[in-house]
Structure formats: structure tokens, C-alpha cells
Amino acid sequence: MRSIQEIKEKALNEHIPIIMDDTLEVIEKILLEERPKRILELGTATGYSSICFSNILNNDVYIDTIELNEERANEAIGNIKGLGLQDKINVIIGNAVDILPTLNEKYDIFFIDAAKGKYPIFLKEALRLSKKGSIILADNILYKGYVMSDYNKHKQRTAVRNLREYIKESTEDENLKTEILEVGDGLAISRVRRWVNE
Image 1: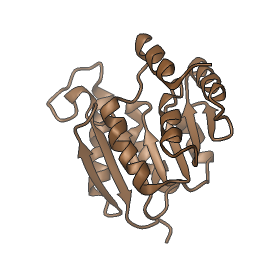
Image 2: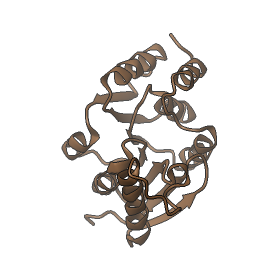
Image 3: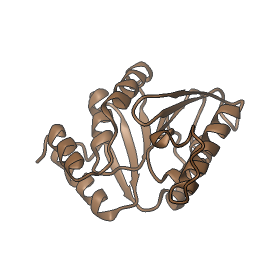
Image 4: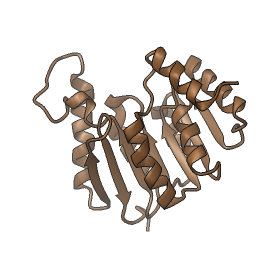
């Protein structure tokens, strides 16, 4: 059984991307203010962020988290079980693009930290699964500073283009109040003004 600190250190040592400390601080404030009952996370990695969110809320929250990489997902399941949180955090293994359309729960908070090139798809699905007052958090939205620069190298071009598209859609949608914070690698915070199907 690993402690939360050991889970964090192992991920850092193995260069597995996990939530940055200053980003987590911002989200902690949001979680304590909002007291969500249901969270949906895209990009479990080894379970570190889900476990942090659960701990911040004294485990009084239910979290669904989706992970594409089966090996990482299984490690996350082990970490979550080791901390006795298996009834609170549900790891779904598979591609979020395929899984999201099958979900019909309404969530209070969304934490998007998966494939950067798919962020606009994730936003659309998050809006479908949101309700009035839901908050959509998108991590790494500035992507090493590339998104706000004239970066156009081939390697990351699709990711950068789609992150720019996410920012455009989330800031121009009248149903969303969005702010972009320069913490970590950039965090977009969007609050849903009214439920889409009202």
C-alpha cells in the first residue's frame, strides 16, 4: 500500500504527468467552496489527482475517472484500493472519446487532463453532462506556452490548434463564464450559467 506522497513521487520519477502543486491548490479552493457530490475526471494516470480530490472533500464525493492506458489504469486501481477508496473512485478503462457518449450522469465538477488534441470533444461532452453551476476545469490549457505564442511546429500542431479551439469555444459560449489562469501549465475554469436543456 502506497501513501499519497509515494504515489506522487513514483509518478514524478517515472515522468508520468500528474497535476502540478499550484494547480491543485487552485482546485482545492474550488472544491472546498463548491462541495461537489460527483466529479468526472478525464485522464486518471496513476490515480493521484482523484485521490487528492477525494481527500480534500473528506472522501464525501463520488468520482468517475477515465484512463486510456490500461497499465496506468490498473496501477491507479491498486493505489485507490490501497487507500480504501475503491467505493468512492471508479476507474473506467478506455478511450474517453468512446466512453463519454455512453455516460448520462450529471456531474458537479469536470477535470479534463487527457489527450490535448481532443479537448474540444471533451468540452462538448462535459456540457452535455453538466447542470447549472457545474464547473469544467481544463488542465494544461496553455501547453508549455505554445498556445498563446505563434508556435506552429508540426509535432504538436494538432494539440496546440485544438487547445486554442477549446479556449475560443469556452470563452465565446454564452452559457459559460470562463477564466484562464496561468498556474501550472495553464488552467481554464468554466462555470455553466444554466443547464443546456432547461
